[in-house]
Amino acid sequence: MNGSAFIQVAIKLAPSRDEAERRTAVSRAYYAAFHAGRDFFDDLGFRVPRAEAAHVYVSRRLSAATSVPSLTAVGNDLNTLRGYRNQADYDMHLAMSLEKVAAGVEMAKNILAELAKKRSPAEQSALIAEIEAYETKVLRESTRRS
Image: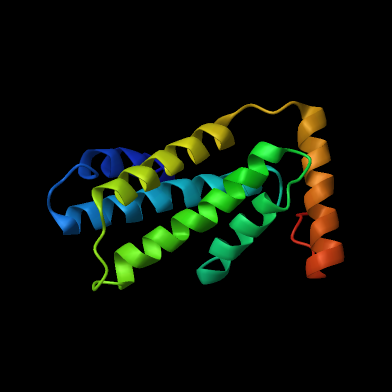
């Protein structure tokens, strides 16, 4: 299964009057976007960690991709969407409005569209170099496969 398929579930559930379904829509929207981000880095040759560490890994590296401003925005949006997902899954005392659900699903759709864009070999090379430099200088680690 491709994780980005979760967006269809999110779109279907988002307009529901049932709050549990709206919360599920936000959660599925986030996971569609997250899996697309994880696949993006995997395709570029990076070893994305499993479990909890993967969430921060993906959004931080996208946010650090300043040579491709649209990817920086994707990283920031993914982090925002994760906050929505955390509210949907953990904060039962806070209502999940139709507006927030719609915004979250739209954000996920935009993230998926941006990550699906075909990038030229030159742009990919520049992006890989930028992420490697970010990892080395800021995070003091390297996750690029040899």
